[in-house]
View 1 (cartoon, rainbow, N blue to C red):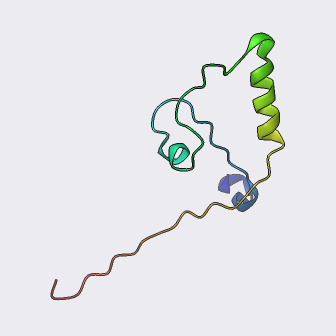
View 2: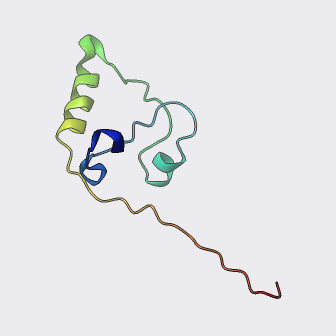
Length: 74
């Protein structure tokens, strides 16, 4: 994105809790497994989910950094 001069602070990212390694999704209470009714008949449940993602309100998410400083004598 930086190569194309896209303002990364204005790009919304979403979490879709599918597959493995969904620690962020689990910690936020969004789930970590594929719902059994993900698609639904005639894709109605999937369409509803996509609509909710498109119309979702964005919110800042703080990804923090830790700096460790060692004393000179350990």
